[in-house]
Image (cartoon, rainbow, N blue to C red; front, side, top):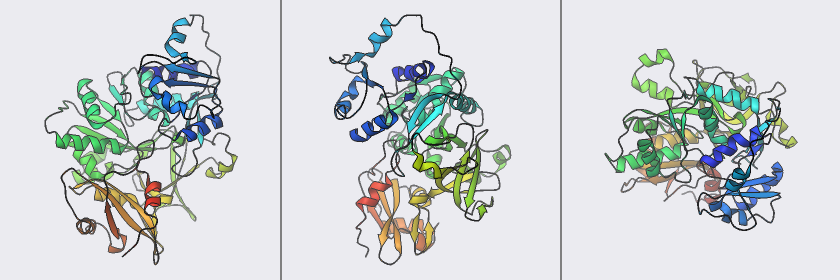
Amino acid sequence: MMWNHSGHLEAFLGVPCAGGILHTLNLRLHAHEIAAIANHARDRFLIIDDVLLPIYEKFREIANFERVIVAPYGCGSVPHGFLNYEELLAKAGDDFVYPDLDENEGAAMCFTSGTTGNSKGVIYSHRAIVLHSFAEGLVDTFGVGQHDTVLAISPMFHANAWGVPYTCTMVGARLVLPGPNVDAESILDLIVQERVTMACGVPTVWIGVLDALERNPGRWKVTETVRIASGGTAPPLSLIRGLDRYGLRIIHLWGMTETTPLATTGRLKRHMLEWPEEKQYEVRAKQGWPAPFVELRVMRPEGEAPWDGETPGELEVRGPWVAGNYYESPDQAHRWTEDGWFRTGDVATMDAEGYVKIVDRAKDLVKSGGEWISSVDLENTLMGHPAVKEACVVGVPHPKWQERPLAVVVLKDGAQVSGDELRAFLGKSFAKWQLPDAVVFVEAIPRTSVGKFKKIALREQFADWKWE
């Protein structure tokens, strides 16, 4: 349980090489949930930052660790009763012998973020991580090489920081680890000071970065284009355009804890470089096409959906680094087909070029009067309005229509706009019945432990909304 720093990277490599399984704990979860996950995983040892010990104290009585090892990087001291990480390393001899491991043995473990129910464990084999790292190094995915300096903003407990630490180590890229300093200004400082060529993080991180750039013109000068790998949720088109102006070029990707996580990247194909700019942006906003060795299909009750970019269905995926089951969760076996396809729970379309567009999570679609409304499309369009910083759309119970969309909006500093004006703005792109019936302005939108908008919290908060 550590922030992104050098000691965490040592554990990323050292634990699997020693024959153990590295299980990264999400330090942003509730203490009881952390303990439940650790006990479910049968974790034996905990390596923890000294500054995170107050979190540990909240669950130490219900967690079954044999030893707790403290990394003294914050306060510099280790309390009595704990092992000192640096002292253990200093005492170690040079007689270590690497165990003879099979490539299919477990190397690392992550639990899902629990956005669709209880967290579930996924174990990654040595083989899966190696193949995944090779794929991330390819030009048409992350394109990471020895000349790159990569800023890993994604927490190392979030699907192994998307595999970036492993890939950077494999190819010899320079890796920048920000610790707990992931506010927009600190990120921009690191990008400039360390001459970062690539960074990875969820869209909410980059929304804050764009806001900081616009509020502080001229403060940060990016001299070379920085590739931004962004996933978790779809980045709004306005965000992609806005960051382009500052030399930060988003490469949209999609994946899950269950896919290690890379499954697609939204690179443009060669012939698309001749397309008009608007059409290129439209493609870049999609989740993209499969990484090598990954297979995707969009399924409906009657079979596979046509590649027309319009017919939605559930996205299914399989490949050499896609999980084949959850750890000790036999009740989840239905998530896999008999021939090995993982049912993601994402609703998507596939176009003639093979590009996937996630319409929504199945549970986040708004069902109004028997018709489905995509919350993602509404959100991304709302965030294209010049006054809007963030927007989240959820389905709220309605006495007549079953559900109606409610928009929850955060405005940019000093900006003003009414709900009716935002509805009129949306009306340029959506039918009247698809528009949110109400707009609520808030100071902040709740986030999950990995930085996504926490829609379940908003649905609970506005469950008793009184429609006019």
